[in-house]
Length: 81
Image (tube, helix red, strand yellow):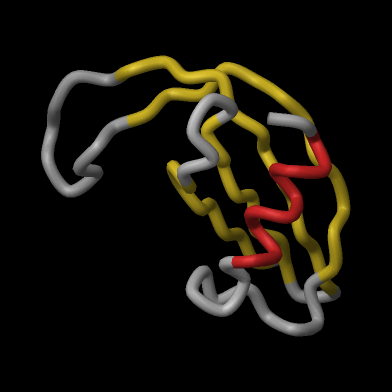
């Protein structure tokens, strides 16, 4: 998956991911991320290569982890400033 494909995957699912219209693309970088299939319970953690696509606005940011191999959205991290 290329950087452009990862960004497009997030844009395609923007509404489902509840990314505010005011948020704009800030960055995209490839990294190794921890993945836990069910975050509500303890369990084994896998490491995956993913694109971290970051959107930001005046009130905060969202980081969307996109699996490099499959394009699956692994996790969305949100933070208010």
